[in-house]
Length: 380
Image (cartoon, rainbow, N blue to C red; front, side, top):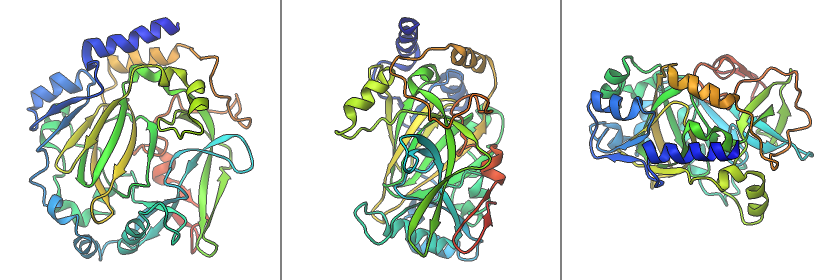
């Protein structure tokens, strides 16, 4: 089966995506017909320049005073805190050799305070704070928590809306610094990702490369942060919940490179992932079910800001093909061992869908977050 899968990865690139690591780059927004015909229907990403140059946000949002004044009368915003910036990612569970899926500590703060945490804690060598703050609430937050900024951006992407036949289901705002990293995952949405300030760096793999992600079930855990001690605690969720997640970290340190490459040979020995840097004024079209890993570079003020529009995907024949591909059982002899706490009888999702990133995910949108500083708070 390995030979057949390798042939699939190569043929997809030869017939549709190209054999380089670059994606198509359009100098201006496509017509709705071109976008639908050449990219959506082919499930093919592209980078579009000169797409948002008319947005007031591109000139005003890099100014901290503008943002804080615009949001001064708004309710508190949801700040996600982690020790190292790897929110919604696999981390070792304390005092064990097992990995768990760790969700961030979420705290409600006035926007001014939240922005201060991000911009004053952008130095990885800083000793002032032992956490990384990220504004990444993915429940249509731009149209709720940040609605005071809505006039600075388009409420939808006109050519995408016409091509896809619907308005976006969710619009999200992201503000962070270079210490925040998003691990490999995929979404059941057509994603239009617009950078306003700073840069976003994507690694992309098509859905056909499913087996290269080594998706396994990991016990769900959540960080809690104590303001008094300045320390994090990581606790397993109760009742137990298991999250299917991509096991591969594409950026390896020299000390663990050999071991990681031997554990995940399908990823490291297969075709290189596509790479894309999204800059202010550009939009990345990220097709549904594409695996993506994201890092970021801040602007001169220490921020990276982006808006993304989630449109519902079509559950068509491509989705049927993908489900068939997932049903093919192939595991390398080098597969990582599952955590000892995993249970065969546990109900899990089918793959690494957006447990933490999905607008429709009931836990993310409506669940409660315990042990917040100053008391228990519910996510909006």
